[in-house]
Length: 519
Image (cartoon, rainbow, N blue to C red; front, top):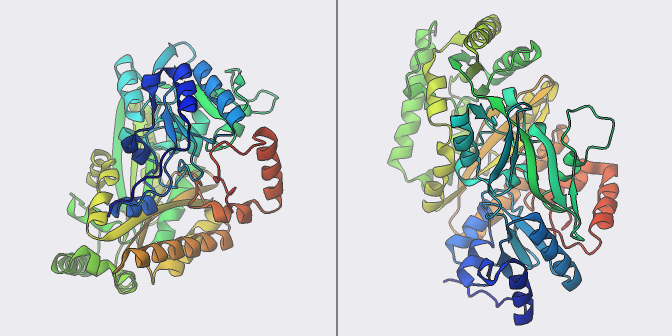
């Protein structure tokens, strides 16, 4: 049964005042708009939506078109003591935009332009509401790319990337979003507008860009950004390798990055996550016949079981599935894509090949890497099928140094494997470490049991991350979902963060309850 939304807390004169700033047509208190902006793609909100439950509606949605209008809204909100949440496309998965204390959503959808391109300096000036796919579609005909390709590129915005310190799928070459920023325009809670000076890195000053980026709208709102762009690539190479286990694959990744190679994509899949590529043109050389035969029979049996039983029934026995997978004689797949001018891309191809073969990798040909590139955005559109089956799915991206990454991977698997089916891949690699991207799936008989399992899994997983010296987030942000662990990760720095927040936002009106504030 659908829950009726509580009426807006705003009075008619307050709604009229907001309309006086942005135009009445750009202020909405309609129930449908309040429902849409009461959630993001955090799986708990998906669970709530499926049963018609919307516990955190905003009071209004306001759509400004420039920093000056945002400034007036923030001054008004400060005077009225009304919470403010900046909102892009709602594609976040950590409840980073949930209006848990009501207030107004500032939608950035009308601030979605590319304002200028400095071809000499390779800098592009953009609004925060522009979708990632639109950025690339407008830059490509001009011969440029920003190089930021998250799997959610079709349904996520620049402002969201900046808020959560997003990473695209080719971050090993182009960096994360914070590496691409040259300057920003931002507003503090009192409505004052500030701009950082777009200059080359290395200036001897506090970097205000990096203070605002990743603050998830808790310190201010970014209304414009000057981003690095690159000449569009001319050539790509593809290669793939099998490794006997995760640790051997990780060692090859480490050697590639520490050799100074900058592959566009460098992704290692654990044994089960590697299964999908076995049916997509994998032409592995030198694979032992007996082992390969066992692997294929194990894969065939797994697929047979998934077909025989409904997905939700299978996922109600996650411990059994995980145990069966652990006993499979599997292999781990590493895919590598290099891009750039032909001679440089080819040079990196051969350097990668040399490293992988010396690290006991077995050539799996081009096909798996080509398949990944062609289907790299599919995952964002497949999760709904799992929820429709009565199950749930979620992802967790954490990071640590090379000496810890293997142990962290095993620790998280051990912590949650009795409650969820789990698999992982390793991507976003650096000279000193890399990100682990876990996928969880489970099913329960009731919605209450489903949420209980969901929360237990996250508590256990984050505890394992902390105990194995990892950071709880790499590129999805913290939001509400990871907030309880943020004080633990900050340790003695936690009171300092609270002081900074209170000094900049004394009324605690900016995106209340996020980044651990609700703990």
